[in-house]
Length: 336
Picture 1: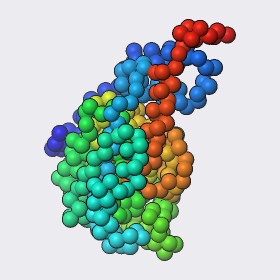
Picture 2 (picture 1 turned 45 degrees about the vertical axis):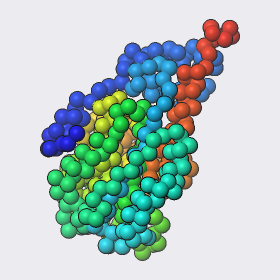
Picture 3 (picture 1 turned 90 degrees about the vertical axis):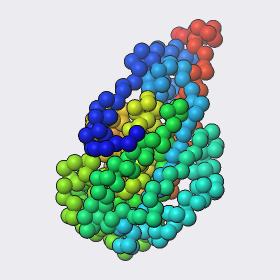
Picture 4 (picture 1 turned 60 degrees about the vertical axis):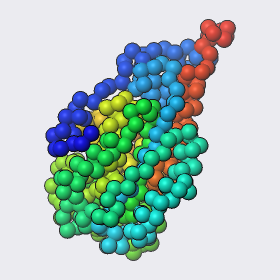
């Protein structure tokens, strides 16, 4: 789908479906009859019921997961906000396409189809300390690319990213969406030193000052402070909702994209779970702001969708129990 205006995106979010209430209740009932004490599987039970509701099947399973990595370049890299130069984005895209990155291995392990979309890498976004990172046309094109990248036949989605400088963009977006200062949201990203951390904090402050309207509207925050790959992630997450495809959110950057959707339309992330807690500075606060508790906490800060791809195994485990376990009646076991 090609979105022509922001009004088109707002309308698509407003029309998004809800989980299947009948399947949700059936999944809850089935869970209560399985050969285990009540709540003995902890969050696995909650995750399984959530997934079944979105897929309309009380005994759902994952057969066709999709991982999408979006890549974009940022004008703010000229300000020294990353430990790596901007050309690494192009080099890593080639590595993804060759199958050599961490996300390739984790996608393969999960049985997921992996797609890579590089968005105008030869044309970085503008330096947002001087004004908006993207005009409306560029933002709509990136969001539309993300929407169109989702395979409607998939039954679980992970979106990841690659873009030198994008932890700074995500921190600026979080600051605009939820308040505070750059100090509250900036982390070390690819591993910048103290001087680099100070530069990132300063860039966030100047970005907010140059784009004050970003504080009052989530779409403006995404357009003015984000990047093409972040806008594409938001588009893909929204498209998954339109197709009742559950989503596992990745780290700080992915969560910043998702947060724009939630701020624009309350409940827009009901089809999402947080895959993990990143080691990146403000990720916990961002998850708290959108009401998501991570499934994993392994100190990851790679991006690429890696933490969320690993969490596919958790969701698969939850569904294996929900859909494959015997009930007390089937097993001939006394329910007590």
